[in-house]
Image (cartoon, rainbow, N blue to C red; front, side, top):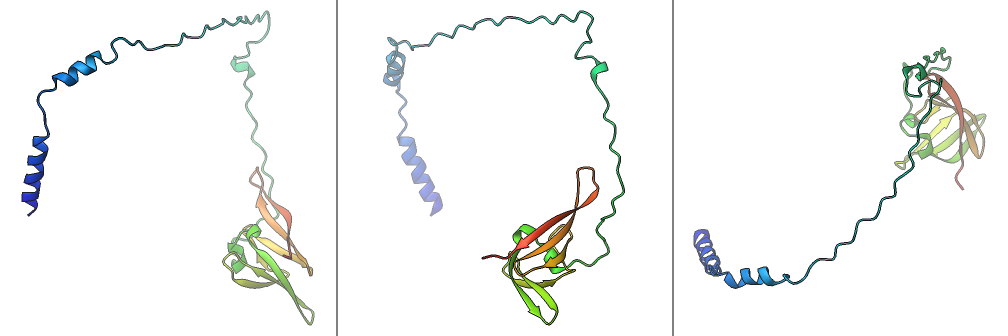
Length: 170
């Protein structure tokens, strides 16, 4: 069936070919013979005044004498290095800016903060727990916010501490 259809299609297409194209060739040769395209003139380029550097007794600005080697920065020992052996807590898998404080719980003398993760799960944490990707330690819990100390690397690859806070959503 497919062979018959293919044969008929080839037969139809071969009938559409016209070997005599003289009239088409005449038309294309004479169609735009009398018209010339309008070409815009190129803009005149104004020459710029040249500047000559007169280095009478001065140092060549491109010489190797002007290239200074930068001294390597001293690395100081960091005292706030995060403990790589410490077991990570569940809230450390989320960036701090993606976590939401949704409430606080008080029972006897214990205080907890209720935190919602980006995936919608709700977690409870207390002072001394870790939160966020930068080993953020919860140092203080208040009714409307928590204080956090994070450990991050600076531009010299030293560990420094940074204060952060997470506030209650209204």
